[in-house]
Length: 115
Image (cartoon, rainbow, N blue to C red; front, side, top):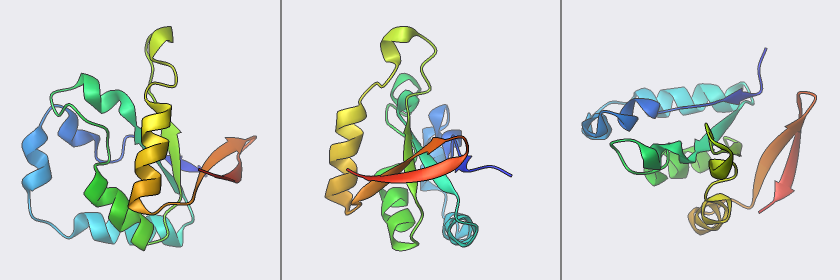
């Protein structure tokens, strides 16, 4: 039905303490996302929220990589100047985590491209 899950973990945007809640829900969710072959969005709009950083955070991206979850980029730009915001920084960080590719979509078809 859909190709991307956006705003995954966005709860921390205005409730940063959410990140410290101990749960296995993230791991279970990433396994389901992987089994359904759906990509998740790295959303840079979190830097404009109380949490001050992208979501999902690095620890979840590391677990996503481990679970073979594909990733894509989104700046969630509500203003033209934020379009593509921090694109190169996200790309660099994904490489540091261990990702070698990310996805974009054309007419619902996923295209994987090297970082």
